[in-house]
Amino acid sequence: MKICCIGAGYVGGPTMAMIAQKCPDIQVTVVDMNAARIAAWNSDQLPIYEPGLDAVVREARGRNLHFSTDVVAAIKTADMIFVSVNTPTKTYGVGAGRAADLRYIESVARTIAQHATGRKIIVEKSTIPVKTAESIRTILAANSNGLQAQVLSNPEFLAEGTAVADLNNPDRVLIGGERSPEGDAAVKVLADIYARWVPRDRVITTNLWSSELSKLVANAFLAQRISSINSISALCEATGADVDEVAHAIGKDSRIGPKFLKSSVGFGGSCFQKDILNLTYLCESFGLPEVAAYWHQVVAMNDWQKRRFANRIVRELFNTVADKKIAVLGFAFKKDTNDTRESAAINICRDLLAEHAKVCVYDPKVPAEEILHDVLGKGANDPRLTIAHSAYEACAGAHAVAIVTEWDEFKQLDYRKIYEAMPKPAFLFDGRNIVDLAALRQIGFRAHGIGKP
Image (cartoon, rainbow, N blue to C red; front, side, top):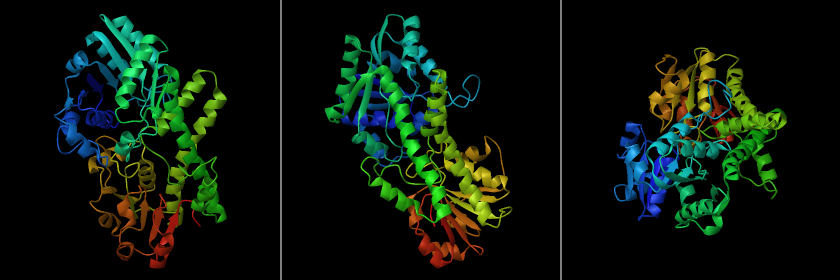
């Protein structure tokens, strides 16, 4: 069997690397039009950072895992084609700010229709709105030359930062297909691949529409829990309660459970906000405005939490941060990844710069040029935004330290050393609740957490 994956991003690259590692008899080719990205996948410096990914790629690359820019050749020879291209939120036209931009999905469908012949299994791996498979099938049927294709939905549920572990031992693998003999046969082919290392009882099969919708709903439910506990963090700060103690108490209820009850400066990443906005747009499109309003509030609460964090820094620093240096520790949206999409740090840096603060950012994995681009925009420059090479460099001379990403190294810093190099009073704002506030206060910091007394 030969597999082709169109799209060498955060989902396509790791997923195909795992399939290739687990199935050495299957030839897996990952293709992308971005030559620089493909060159990075073929180098010792992979384009994305995930713990354990280097070892998986090194084992399979050159044996049965290949990275190429020759999209047409890969499509022609593949038995199964995974579509793993970006589906960002539309920034224009109907549904701007909410609907998914499906131009790349459509472009891939037309490319497949133009070059593929015979029997093919097309697998949606991108996060897409329900009923997208119908659009793909329509394009394939109208433009193909003898192509007989079955379209499956196989959404990815891995979490960045733990992607390799999630792929190696997933909670579940979801495969949706057409309820027909041909559709069932295609589902079985894909299920058999995953069954090489995933227990059969974790491979869930549904119809196409249930599978497409399940991805959006799963992310919406997870984000809802984060926004829910973050809303309570504000109440905890007002009353003197401790949000971690509240979360622990309610998490002991077996009906609720402890996961995703960690209060923070807000969620980020490529999926949560995008998928909830997509879900709200779908609800409105199907005449369900009340449902749309309910889910939109999850995003609204997340945006408010990020603003609240920046506003608290300004308020505690005597209502002005103009010309004061603020050290921002962490820029990736979560630890153990270099992904900055929808990172809370972007909004926080912008809010502080709007208050005329001097912002110095340090992140162990995000390149300086990406930080500048995300905060300021392409080609823009602001001398008040600087990038440090270490946490100590960022904090030196800072009036306040803001921990925005929960990198493990920030738990192990010598905060007494940092305190001594700061103007007094020295402030610290822990946006992830990862440091000991009481110990920091003993040093002399005016230390504040999320939802902490």
